[in-house]
Image (tube, rainbow, N blue to C red; front, side):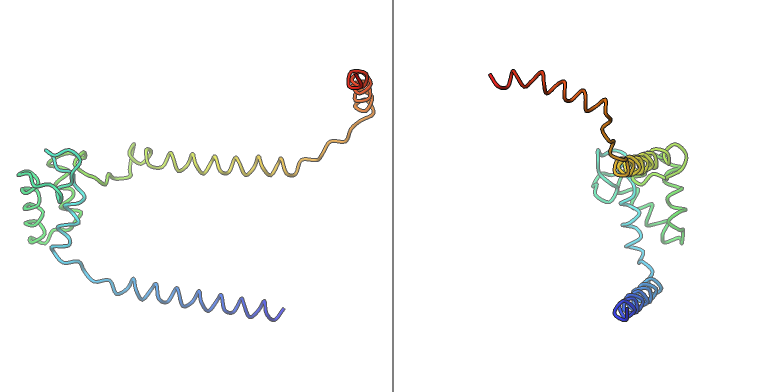
Length: 159
């Protein structure tokens, strides 16, 4: 019993250390530079004239103009949300490579998750029922049927 208490103590101590380190790490995040913000935002939007490239990846004139607009708005002190709203307002929601999870888009993202969780829960219920199901005992009528079948097959097997 004392080894169990000791192991619980170690687990509690390790948990406290992990929590303390996590809090310390998260509380000392540095603010991203303007260049980092610009690159991050440019990676979130699709190039309007290129197929399958972000604004950050593309060398097209349209992508360069969007990157310049992002840089200008960052220098003006706008937040990422304000810049995102401006770009979506200018080009439509289709420019965003990270669509918002609200409305119909939210349903598209959440439906597979809900279906998966429901399927797993259903399988758990079915397997538990199968495991807990009692094994049926053979009745006297069952035994009589088996004996009749054996007696009919016995002459055929002996041949």
